[in-house]
Image (cartoon, rainbow, N blue to C red; front, side):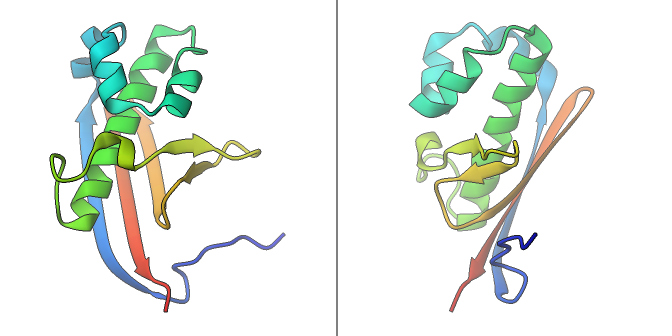
Amino acid sequence: MKLDLPLINNKINNIGIDLVYLPRMENKIDNKSFINRILSENEQLLYYKLTNKRRKIEFLGGRYACKEAYAKALGLGIGKVDFHDLEVLYDSNNALITNKEVNISLSHDQDYAIAIVLIGDNK
């Protein structure tokens, strides 16, 4: 099986990383205003299918970390980049996919979610 890994043979131009303390998300999981600000419509479809409180916290915190890491990789930060600019979904194998030409990695462990975004030069 051949994987499409666009950055392996290309230069990495920018890296962004973000760490989220998940307990900060606990009081946000039912806050529709916050959810609408952070998650795209497609991400919300996935989010509202979740029934486990812990999984909702991880999903929301993880997506927040991804979007912050993306803004950092662009060198702009949130405010100049909208949370909806990056959409993080799943492919048929449950691997993360995005609507941008980036490589992304997301991990959760107990009280933390961490995301790394790599932006490459595909020339």
